Length: 146
Image (cartoon, rainbow, N blue to C red):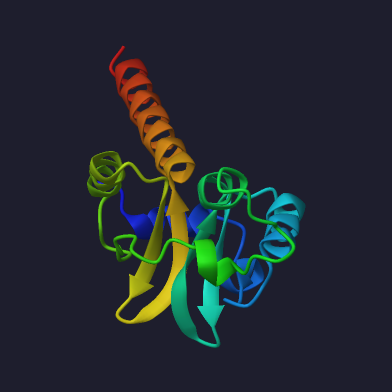
């Protein structure tokens, strides 16, 4: 069974390159997200995890409330109550958790240290990769027995 650690191995970005501070403006965080082509940024205060700012946070807590992206700080809109997962949690567990909580991102912690983030897209890609490997193995098995 595939684990969160398997997903993190395939991801190119490191956490440090996609973080902002709580005092970062929403506009600057959005610029980073656009530049990196990602849908969220981790909010860190030094080495301390504070939350995640997502595109959904922006649309629901800035746009719909008529706030300004240049004046609003990330700390005002970030999600700080997302469940945490660890590298040994399964892909199935994460998919169920996301489905139950109606969320798209999960911070990954090894003990108390933030080591990454997994998105619903990451989970779907890993599931497809697993199925492709299974199909290849079955084809190889069938061809070897002919």
